[in-house]
Image 1 (cartoon, helix red, strand yellow):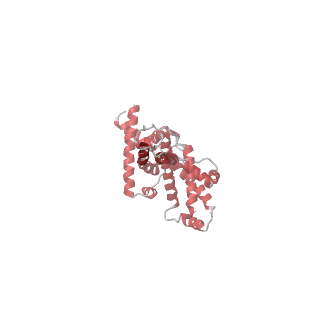
Image 2 (image 1 turned 60 degrees about the horizontal axis):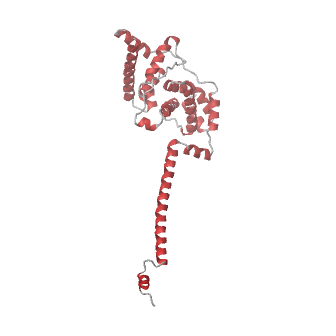
Image 3 (image 1 turned 180 degrees about the vertical axis):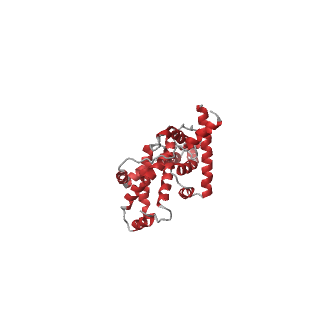
Length: 188
Length: 111
């Protein structure tokens, strides 16, 4: 289904277009959410929330951006909000966060279900390191390296300039290298 | 582990997601989304109660009630004090305790 056809169906009030969107985009949404939150049950929840938001705002979609970009943007925002909310619940509320009374948790091991067997161990280390990056860097790295999106697409999703995305990628790679080096040195 | 080995290990880890397959969500996603949308259509009262049960709103409401109660309590007390004073004044008037003419009468009793 191309963009023009999709907008035509939305404009004609065809609500069945929603089931086609879910069918086409479910893996995109689920994988993006899973790469960010790293918990399968949470990624399932986020996937449902994303499609509910898509359904509620479908009438307002006029095709200024690509449908894929729009869905990616909702997914990234929902995933980051979900993480923030969960962290707040876990650490006993906003006051503790404001006064920085919490201690950083060590991220748990996450085994991505799609990773090749040979890479399982390294991928788990990578995901653990990713959790220690600031959210923007993590999202940029995930979308580029794992989802395989171009910088141009990432800049549209994150509503940033191309230069800002490039800078985020450089910083995320440098940050990851540092974290991984420390990790492997401590293991040696 | 020497520097080269370390760099190689880091590079291998950074590229470990290459060739990874996409994960799939659990089956019947559309059915579950539809079910969730149906349950999320709350009635007016449910919306109000869920709004009031938010911790921030609930704490603010309790604080507001306590302040209102304190204000009413302090105002009632000062009103009672004023009432008491008025009652005392009425009593002194009734028994003419502060009336100078009454004292004069007492001191000049006619035979």
